[in-house]
Image (cartoon, rainbow, N blue to C red; front, side, top):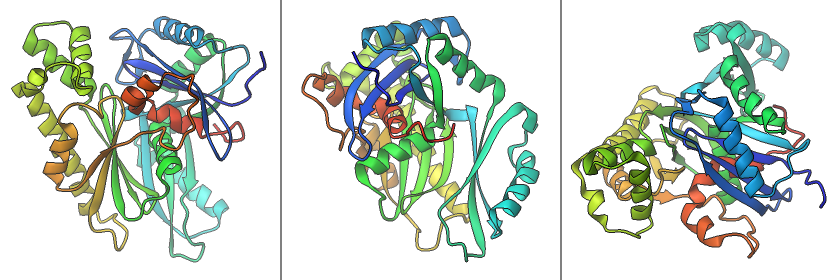
Length: 354
């Protein structure tokens, strides 16, 4: 068995670990994928509470997928409130002057002691002759990222790339659908939160986290039907696939959560326009794209479309990925949306910086 030099993409979420393995540079081919649930409470609000359990879950998933771990390089991602992203416009200067200015002002923008953060920045595409240049600043608390690095290393793997969910989703979306003209919103609905990102003509503009996720609906079902959270999660997934009666979908509490998330997405868009950060010519969001584990929550896409009065589409992160017949197509078709971050991570290479 030969050693696979491609990066192993690992998305450690608050409720599950997702692994995606691909080959190819310009044209991607899926080699392997899988998911392993994490016991409730092992990760809370992005912080690993029980590293041993998370490591054990990752090892179990890798064994099940028959992935060799010794020396294997990985790409991982962090998201939600654990990652701080700022888009700042600076006067157009050469990169050395710009770097000095950014470093001097970073602490003020993040409102944290920089000694407690891993911090990086990158220039967005813009004309060197423009009056201003847009800079993306990204930071994460050192102790939090170190938790994830420790899990990866304790599983026998190496870290090659560290990304954040927002840009992993962007990479996935751009590979499958290209740079979409106009202003769009991508809502990544995770287990504990939803991350809404606005993109204009294929360029990152703004991100906001909403504290509503897949677990919010599951807890509502568990409470309404007096059942366990595990059973409630299974019922929600089955309902989303049309396998059980939709009666559970009409619970008042379920509808209340769905309406609330749709309204929060509208609030996110309104806030963006009120901040006057929208580029000239982009005056309206043209479409919303849903991804993540909660994307197929029954009735969510229709509710968002009705609330915002714009088209809503559930993203297939494997749209342009070549999938061999030997892989579990039923799982990919029904649950493919949960792998969006991992697919985006698979677009990275070992030449990328961490």
